[in-house]
Length: 519
Image 1 (cartoon, rainbow, N blue to C red):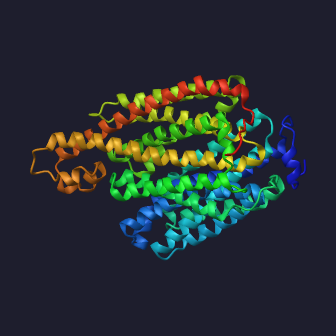
Image 2 (image 1 turned 180 degrees about the horizontal axis):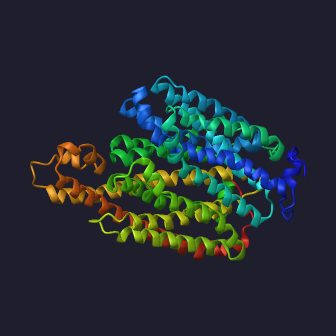
Image 3 (image 1 turned 60 degrees about the vertical axis):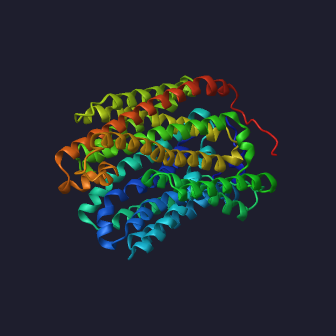
C-alpha cells in the first residue's frame, strides 16, 4: 500500500495484517502523544520559578495553567473535522510545526500576558495533534486485534507522558531556567516532521467540505464556558457567574446541534450518535474519568500536604501507579483478543473499585502512604484499560471517513470527564472537610474559620499563624473527605462494570456501523 495515496488508505481491506512499517508509524505517532501528556504536567514544577521570573498575578497564574487545556478541549471537534477534510497526516505535520513554534514562543515569553498567549497557541496546536494521531492509527491498522493493541499503546504513551512530566521538569529545573520545560518539544517535533512523510499514510475525505465557520464558533461557545465553569467550580464553588457560564455553554451546544442538523457540511455528523456502541463507550469513558480524576486530585494532594513530600518525591511515588497504567494499556487489548473487550473492561473497572476501597479504608488518623498508593495503582490500572479499550470501541464503531470526528469525541469525553471529576469530587471532598472543621471549631473565636475552611492547602500555607492542633484537625478532615470520595468512586466503578457487562457486551456482536437518518 502506498502511504502517499489517500485513496488506497481509504479502501484498504480490513483483513490486511499490519507490517513492520505500520508499527514504525505507530512509534512516530507515539512521539506527539507522549509530548502532549508531558506538556500537561511538566509545568507544575516550573511554576514557582516561572512566577518568580514573570511575577504573574493570581488570576494570571490560573490562566497560564488552564488555558492550554481550554484550547485543546475547545478545538478538538473542529480539528478532527479539518483533518478528515485536508488530510490527517498533513494536519498532524502543520500542527506539530506550530506546536514547536509556540513552545519556543512560550520558553522566551518576557511577560505573563505573552506566556498566556503562547499557552493558548500551544493548546490550539495540541488540538490538531490529538485527533490526528488517533485517527491515523485506524489507517495504519485494519485488523481489529492489532488496532486495539495500537490504541492501547497510544493511550499508554499519553499516560506515560503525564507521569514523566514532574520528573523531567525537576531534572531540567536543576540545571536550566523555567523556559526549558517548553523547549523539550522542539527536538521531538523535528524527529516527527522528518519521519511522518516516510512512515505515516495520508487519508482525507475528498467529499467533505471545509469546516463551517458558524459551527466552529458555536462549538467554542458551547464547550469553553462549560469546561471553564467546572474548573472554577472546583476552586470557588457555585456562584451566579458560574451559573451564567453553564447557561451560555448549554445554549451554545444546543445551537451547535441545531446547526449540524440543518447545514449540508456539519463538522460533527450527528449520525455517529445513532451507534449504540459509540454512545455507551463515550459514556463509560466520561464517567470513568470522573472517578479517576477525583481520586487523582486528592491522592496527589495527600502526598504533598499530608505526607509532606516535595513535588519531585511525590512524582516518584506516583511511579508505580503510572507503571500499572502502562501495563494495563498493553495487556488489556491482548486479553480483549481472547476474551470480549467488555469482559476485560469490566474486570479492570472492578480492580479500580477495589483500589478506591483501599484508599477508603486508610486510617484518617495515620499516615499510610503505601496503602493509598497501592489503591491508586489499581485505579490507574483501571484507567489504562479504560483509555485503551474505551477509545478503541469509540473509534472502531465509526466509519473510516469519520475517524477524525470520532477520535475528537473520544478526547472530548476524557477532557470533560477530568474537568467534571476535579470539580464535582473536589467539591465533595471540600464539603466533607468543611463539615468536619466546622464541627470542631463552631464555637471557637480563636480560630480563623474563614481561613481554615478554604482547605488544607490554606492551613499549610499559614503554618506560622495556626496551632498544631488546628493543623491536625485540618489533616484529619482532608483524609475524611478523601475517604468519602473514594467510596463514591468505588461505587461508580462498580456501576460502570455492570453497565459494560449488561449493556455493552451484547452490542459487541454488532459493532457494525448502525446508522440513522439525520433529522
